Image 1 (cartoon, chains in turn blue, purple):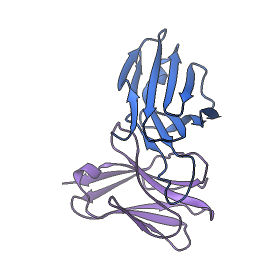
Image 2: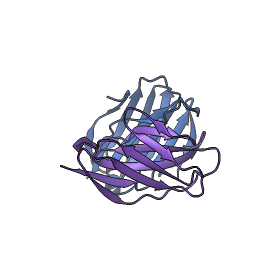
Image 3: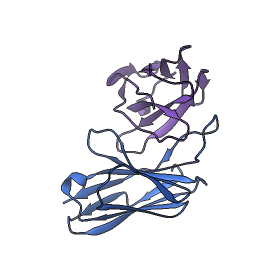
Image 4: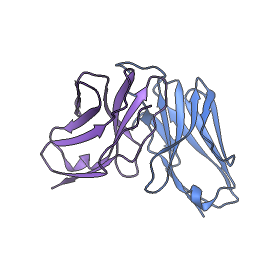
Length: 116
Length: 109
């Protein structure tokens, strides 16, 4: 357990369903992130939240909707997804500073999403 | 952030040192070198980072050349559990982490 918990671990959903992915961090970090990893592709940064405000949205389709109600929780709301959205969705958190004590991002174990 | 170049794959015998190279010839003075690894279908795991001095922790050592244009991650005694994809990332403070394709390390019994 890394201190970043993602639920569910696996999700199968139809293209007309609405579902949400949840991420929770217990590290006292002030920034959280969503990444997508499709099969045999590099991780793609989707969304960045710093101090609960969205600071980056990398041209992600509107069928993906993030929500950050507080610094410990991050959600990714999904609706009308396509089969090509099937991927591993990873959440990460960090303390937004640099220097020797900054160990970068701590990742969760991910949610394996399959869209049928 | 500067781009990095890593070999796509490497093998290492169990118990031997694994030396993973990374080129970052366009690195600037305020960019740190980070290493992460990703074991199959899990989230990436932080290994080590440095600016210009060599660094060592319980997992690995990081050797950065004097001109900072390349670095090497050393796993001193590779085990089967070290089989993973290793990512070298160069990052300016405050920027996000962008992952490339990394090096797929296979530790052979």
